[in-house]
Length: 94
Image (cartoon, rainbow, N blue to C red; front, side):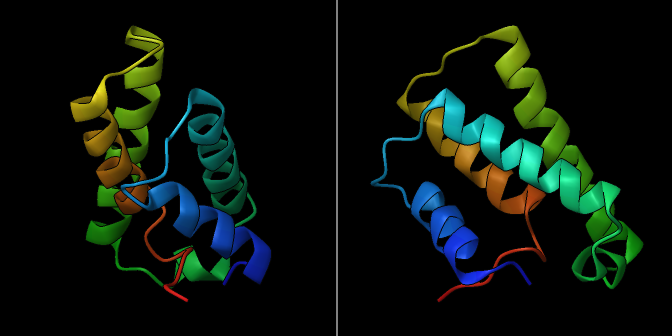
């Protein structure tokens, strides 16, 4: 599991009332990428279908950033859903 400070940051960014910005999204993607590259045990213990869901959501967020650069409220809601799916197994509710 991630340290408490980082977990709190994740939960804040995934809160629907928090104004998600591009820098937050990039930070989350970088963190998830690092955990995957490091072979984090939280990810290694997930079944393959779940890992594929994580990867799919990660790719959707990355493509959204590349294609648009900015997003509206509806897209921000979808972005949060993808970020929640992409970070599955790495975060926990306080």
